[in-house]
Length: 452
Image (cartoon, rainbow, N blue to C red):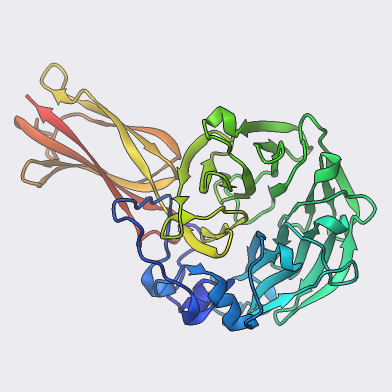
């Protein structure tokens, strides 16, 4: 299990008081009982008390009646080293979450367990912004804001109590930057929108690399990055992923800025897809928001399409023009900003049994091959049960398998190695996440086989 287990804590801990806190979060009813996707799941009740969405009411309660969400954009999350108690693991899931409130020219963030604060105003001075877009944050307390209409990145620092201005980065070098990301080493990656490129700065703000042109990085608007030293990276390699093509394409680059893979919405059959932001999970999979189709799309490490999550609406598992997305890779915690609220999920589990061949087995064809497709690496168990529900064969007691297509063969024998009698049998596949959602969530898939 990645990162151990998230402890059962109160709402403020589980959301890091993220974007809202305590009981003013709006727990919406399930929009439709038959629509319960599980690629992302809500945190268990003992972790969040059923609250998973923060909206305008939350903001007004904490920042005053004049506060409002106006074109929220980027979102970032981190576990601040300054507030971590190394003597215990009980607080390891207490995240600080930052949201860019673009048309209010400010950053909204939580302080401690239950206090919400805002930082910034309209202007060009220290601690001011003009229509900021993207945001990135590290555990060292440094926060970077893509200050789009001021043509710069603003660097702030959070000491665990409040945000404070540190410096600007890229002033005079950037043109309308819309996205930024920071890796575990402190290197800053900027989507330099007006110059059709990605610019990389070292931890003290000096240019370290730049790559892209109008063909390979046209008007980039968001960026995510993971480096080879990242503790919570399964692959231990440097990957940079950007939304470019004016929101119509996602491109992945290696550490030298060479294009590794690219995918666009038209090729996926997503009508009018407009990607808003991207995030990378522990396994290297890429999640992208889609403002037009009101969904989260998931791609594998090579940008092969896996699945889409959500639909348009304001209920559970629904989005209204999702923009920013952030993933805390250690535990698989996911934060999404949308038009008038922010939502909180855990990475869950999903997949399906693609085929069982043959469906009818006999002495000439004593075995069946089970092909299953997983949308997320999973811990799984496969059993064969007879028509009365009794387990006749435990095919796979528990095994971890990769994302994508996986095969398991049943030879038609029971636990004693004897041929099963004639009749109807059910192949039952139970999936569990490998993140800390393991033990809280599972999904069961079934397929029928007949023995003649």
